[in-house]
Amino acid sequence: MNVPFSRSLSTAALLALLLPLAGSSSMTDWAARRPASPAAPAARPLQGAKPDPAVIAQFGLYNDAKLQSLITAKGKQMTAISDRPGDYGFTVVDSPIINAFATPDGHVYFTRGIMAYFNNEAQFSGVLGHELGHITAQHGKKQSRNNTIAGIGMILGSVLAPRVMQSVGGIVQQGVGLWMLKYSRGDENEADGLGVKYSTKIGYDASYMADFFQTLQRTEEQSGSSIPTFLSSHPNSADRYTRVKQLAAQAKQSAGRSTYLVNRDQYLRQIEGLTFGEDPRQGFVESGVFYHPDLKFRFPIPSGWKSNNSPETFQMQEPNGKALLVFLGASGNSLDAAAQNLAKSIGVANAQAQKTTINGFPALVFEGDQQAQDQQSTPAHVLAQLIQDGNSIYAFVGLSSPTTFGTYAPQFQRAAQGYARLTEADKLNRQPEHIHIRTATGTQTLASALASAGIPSKRYEEMAILNGMKTTDKLPKGMLYKVVGR
Image (cartoon, rainbow, N blue to C red; front, side, top):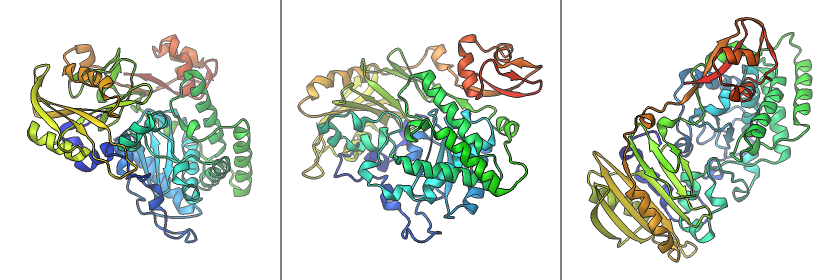
């Protein structure tokens, strides 16, 4: 969460987060944005050059003019030589997750996380061509929407109990998981081929795309994490590296150029200062407590619950998916007005409301059932606790099925009752890490260069992967390399 809550969520955004699920439609319905005629090579997408509001609500924009200029320029250059030119868009989003994805409406998104792991423009170009290839080959149009859902962040829909999933489907689909497409092996192979084709056509050595796949494989092996990455939404295979290398060699031979661009130093200089990993200024979890340094508050998370932070909300999920607690900004110039707006937005009528204080803050609490949207919807029971902190009004919205609400209501209440101003200096002053570019002062191994840069030895392997190298690799004098620090 990176904006003041009291101004961050419109009624439309609240509806996307909290309305009961009616059927299988959602506000981010990619199928509804297909080009009108598959046979028309220049068909214009409906969303196209503009980033999707649902994607930006999930991740936020990454404000770096250099990187945005790079992805826009290379994207437009590729679009012009692609098999299906159109008014496509290209955006860098503010997420540490290592991923890139394209939506069938004609937009390509790269996270700042993946930008950190590229080591030259040729790698960047190859992946950009791969994602553009999914659009130009119209892979998204071949699939049923129900079979193409994958999540970025915490995918509540895959673990939430069916009754609660139906009742809080808006949260499942919009607030926590980003709708994306899972492509078949054939589609992935075709996109790899198009990535090679497009990046070669604009002058880059596409073989570096294969090297990048190896870097990403190493990140997964090191972390042992199930966090979604480029390779989890873009299935890897043992022969993918070899296949892309072969395709690149064939493409270079066909193109007939004598030289191809790599642009290592140019790329590294462009990512100087890039935020690396989680940005604690937007909120972070430590020892079961959520801290927000910029907004200066803190509150506890129910013990053992999963959590996910996005630009507009902080969501907490019971481990078995039977309850959900969402913290968000409530719009209104008073507690009464904010409560009325919130109740209307989440579909709670005839709520029982009362004024109170929570941990010394003026507060208002209401409870009630969501109204069913149709016979297929199962409404959740809702406890909303609104807290006024200065000029801001925040809400803890707890949801579960009516039959289990009594079990989880005390946990909803404890989280709100623990809301407090953040005063600890070490939390208020927490800063994110950034990529910094260093120059080798002499012929040395990467490990010795990292030691000279003050990197602790426990992070050598992490830095080696970030550089696409091994710790024993030799760096000639003057070679650029990456380190991470505050």
